[in-house]
Image (cartoon, rainbow, N blue to C red; front, side, top):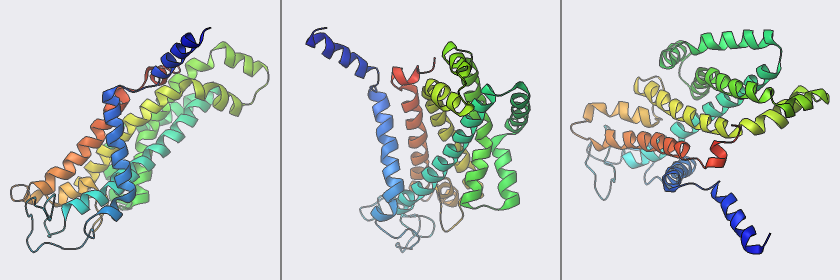
Length: 284
């Protein structure tokens, strides 16, 4: 193979892992909110709970870029710090849900029929409960706190992650290379993490992104109903709720947290829908 043909093959290989412009835009917005979630409290122009305006629901101005809220607090600071709760809680919940669901799904695929059937029927029953209703019941009964929110959201979306990963793992488990590994006497752990997981990783990552979007929306819904992050802290859904009374007087206090939620969820969908072909098709 000549040098030119090698370079062409290398370029084609890298192209399979490159994002198109829509995917890059979605990734850029997600990275932006990730940075804001980490450094939001440091870059906020005002202390998040401090009343800095003599009026309430002030319009957008050079001093208050997003106006002020119902108490006269700076909305830009509230949105920046609120990203820590919306992004942080959602990321923790989706990580816990998907890790547990994926591992259980692969274990069920390689285990005996009795364990697979029992676990699948239990999680199917749990998955049949409407997500927002389940969250409302649990948080109302136990009380709202960040650990409770993370665990509740993880339990809501773990059965779906289990079913998705199990369906993929069952197909991979019947392939010849897995059968050969089993004949060699490899352990269950080896089969799961060395043979099955690498071959379902692409679809699993896409599913993780979708569940992140669902969790952001459910968390925002719980906060809008007053059962999410509790005052004086607030995530984006809580910011919408606490300023709804001033929608006519101070629309920016409601519009900007809503835009933040929409930009994060839409950008994640843009990223997932435009994953590079080699990542998207891995495991098919």
